[in-house]
Image 1: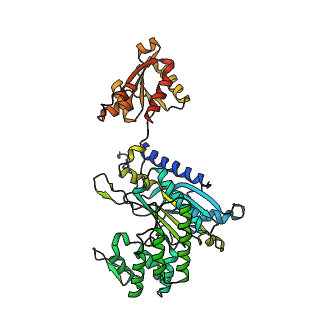
Image 2: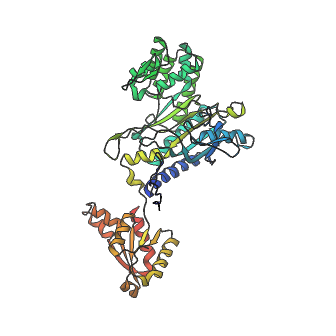
Image 3: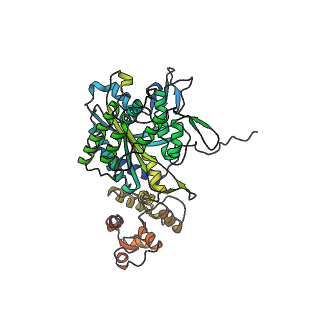
Length: 489
C-alpha cells in the first residue's frame, strides 16, 4: 500500500488570506470612500472579473499565451481572456459597448479585486482591491479637479491624516511639449524619457540624467539603455522635473518658463491653471494637492493631467525594518482609451484608491487599532441545561442589532472568557443555575478589563460609571449591553 498524498498547505505567493481585522480595515476604507463618491453624484458600476485579453490595452496578446502581467486562459471558443488588471480598462469596454444609452458625462465608481501577474513585494500583492471613480465624456479640466478633490476627501474619510501623504499633480502635455521643442519626437524615445523621469525618487537626479542619455549601469552591473537625448534636451528635462517644490501658482510660473512656448506644453499649463482655479473653489488647500512635474505615472494610456498620492508616513515591517509603500492611489486623464474600441475620441479622467495597499500601509504605520474588527457579545455556555435560554438571549440581542453568539466549544468557563477576549468581544454574559433561579444575568464588561489591563487605572469616575461586572434582571439584558456598547464608541 502506498501512503496517501498529502499536499502542503500553502497559499500562492501574492495571494493573501485575510482575517477579520484586515477585512474590517478594507471594508471601512471602501465604505468611507464610496460615501464620498456618492456625495459627488457618482453611480456604482460592477463589471466581471474576466475581460477578453485584447480589451486590456496594455497587455495585448503578442505570444501564444498572453500572460505577461496578467493571468490569462483560453475560453471554450478559443478566445483568450484574462483577469482584469485594473478597473479602468473594463470601464472603457463598458462605455464603448453602451455609449448610446449612457448619461453623458458618465460618472461612475467601482470597487473590486484586480489581479496582476507580477513579482509580489511589501504592500504589493498579485490580488488586491481598488476603489475607482471616473468621469467619461468631459474634456473640461474642472473634471480633473473634481476627481482630485474627491481623492483628497476620500483619504480624509478613510482615516489618513493630511500630513501623512501628498497628492501630486502633473500633465503629460507639459513633458510632451518640452520634448517636441527639444527635437525628441520619436515615440519610443518619449517613452524612455517617461520611464526615466518615473525613477526620480529612487535614482535621484544623477541616475535620471544617465537614463535620459546613453544609459545607466546599476550596482549589479546590469545596463539599462537610455533615451538617447542630447545634452541640451537632458538639461531641459532636468530643469522641468525640478520646477516643483513651490505653491501651485509659483510652480505654474516656473513651468511656463521651462516649457518654452510649445503648443502642447502651453495647453498643459493652461489646463493646470484651470485645475488650480477649480481646486481653490473646491477648498482643496495647497498642502493637500501640489503640482509636481516629476510625476508621470507608469501606465502608457494617460494623455493629459496625471495624479499620484504618495504615502509619507514612516512604516515598519514585522522585523522592524523601514518599508516604503510609495503610491497608495493615482489616476489621470485618458482620452484615447475608449477610442480603441470606437475609433472616436472620448475624453475621460479618474482616480483609483489602492484599498488593500492603503490598509496595509495604515497597519504598518501603527494605525491598525482603529480598524480592529469587534467580536460579538459572547454568551458563556455555563451548563448544558441552559442552552435553550442561552440561544434565546442571543436571539434577543441580534433582534436589537447587537452581534451575539453562544459559545459552542467544549471548554470550561475560564477558556470561554479567554475566547471572548481574543474575539475582542465587548462583553460576556454569564448565566448559571443561581442566576437562572433568580431571573438574573451577570454581564462582564470586557472593554473595561482591557483598559485596566493596559494600565489605565487612575480614572476613578470613569471606572465608577462602568463597573467591570454587573448582575441585572433578565429583562434588562439588552439595555445593559447597549449601554456598554454606547460607552465604548
